[in-house]
Length: 80
Image 1: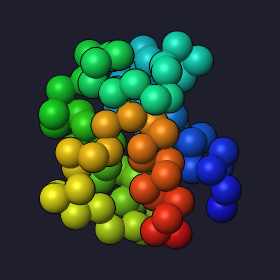
Image 2: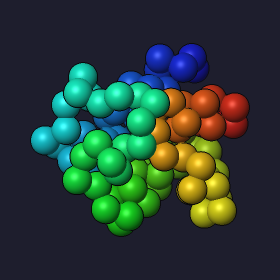
Image 3: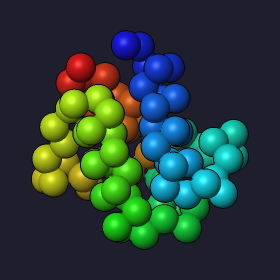
Image 4: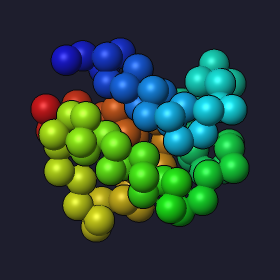
């Protein structure tokens, strides 16, 4: 799975949680929670969804460094 595939999965998980989000409007290198109305529970649900769809463990201690789409893609890509 390449970075573009992972990015598509991240955007899909985002729009499952927040259907009003248009991935085209997001800056991939900016924090997700600053770009959309996404609280900490939504963000946790995003990470749980990615864990389930990719079967990748995402320990809670890593949550703080997974703020943007780019950070998520890099993190998940390194673990696949």
